Length: 328
Image 1 (tube, rainbow, N blue to C red):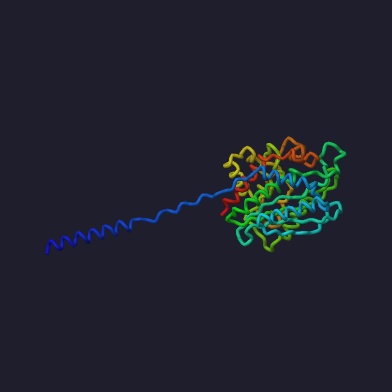
Image 2: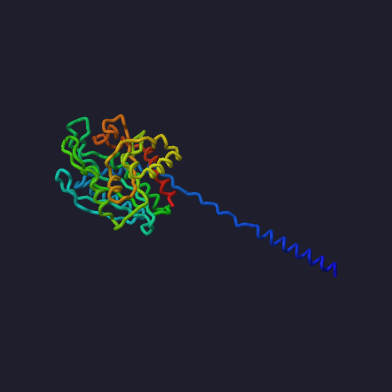
């Protein structure tokens, strides 16, 4: 009997020990999935800038403007975007009545969490900063001023076609940004620039439109570009500036994305911030050695493909891709 009891105690102890061991085991910790960010192709973005320039100056009311706008809508649709063509008529500061359109390419429009990317696709109707006075009323190619930002965004759209982000992305191409007052005119005209973004910010393509933040690209293609922290961006969206500049530094582009203050620039992001309350920053070249702060080609007939670098487009595009693909 004592032997039987001893045997039963040993068996009971064994099962208690096994139960205790099993209870101490914990489920394996979940390993966070690494974010896979597409590789931005600077040469592809360059070709998209080149395509725009091939139409000629994209000045509102011109044939080149119409054809380029049609191409932009078609290529965004080919990448799977839900495209809204926001057509409107606007009166310029000088009395010119302009037929304009903002082009909105929506990726995953059903998602509530959204990010806004934007650029302007029109070009300056006058080379009023050209050193040659005979060019002051000639339209410019706008390869960098307009074309570069759009080229980067079309390349980003190409990636969104096959590698969706966790958040929805809206790419807005603003019209009539560059029809502001001629440099040789002395009268001050408030809000004569960025007419397309003023229109969209007051009447967005969707009622109650909102996005977590916005990134505007303007003049982002020149070789050896420097992108200082623009003043309006810092005022309205300093945390977004820090987010973007940190990604650029991590990617090895800290020499381009300079963490120093630049000037205050009236650009499309001003009205996105002011009218919609979406914190929006401007990535824009800053050249303190040039008379206007933008480079020797700016608003001159020299703003052509010679001032476009695939390496600069790559730096800007890869930075923006890393920002939006890491957004949860």
